[in-house]
Length: 265
Image (spheres, rainbow, N blue to C red):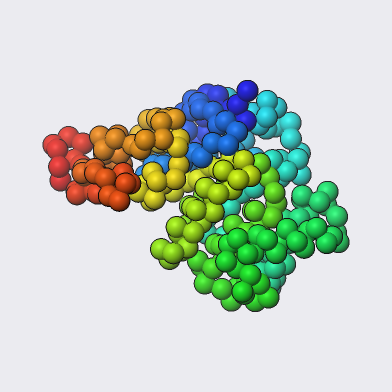
């Protein structure tokens, strides 16, 4: 049985259809990358998986149970989500922000336990945020805040991590660090990881399954971890490019914008 099953899911904003009869599955311990151009429905799909939106047709199942049958707290025990571009609105410190994850994981206990504190400190350490744990969240850079929100997701201790562009605003060191962390969580703690990303080359080094969404409604689900063919990338992103191998990694270098009618622009 699949851990997550999406069957013929459709969603539209008014008359603008975003997802049309999308179907794919995620197994326990998968590392899935969701890729595609802007406007293809990636963030919408993330919000559907997190229960923030409801499919207008089709079904989503988590552990064999309809996502509609889960309460908010029950779903928070299954999936931890890191959104893109989250803006702090209150004066909480970094440590307080990460501790909020334990509110759901601990049965909504209003007082943290010794175990809660240990879990939070570990999440801070793993994301390199412990050194500014007592600073207010609004005083951090965008990249630092992003790592705090990833720490909060880790402290939730769910089997599934759902991350929408987790390395946006991060420098190169922390981009690699976050993906190394996700890889280790998958291998050492059997986490299932679902990541939305625009960094094709970084994703192809870490993910082993790919879901491509095109802005014209096409989809492709590939469970081959060998990387994406250049022709597929060109078709879904509307670019031309060359592929190769560098330091043992498959890479794609875009060289131009594809004119769908007359070749290369």
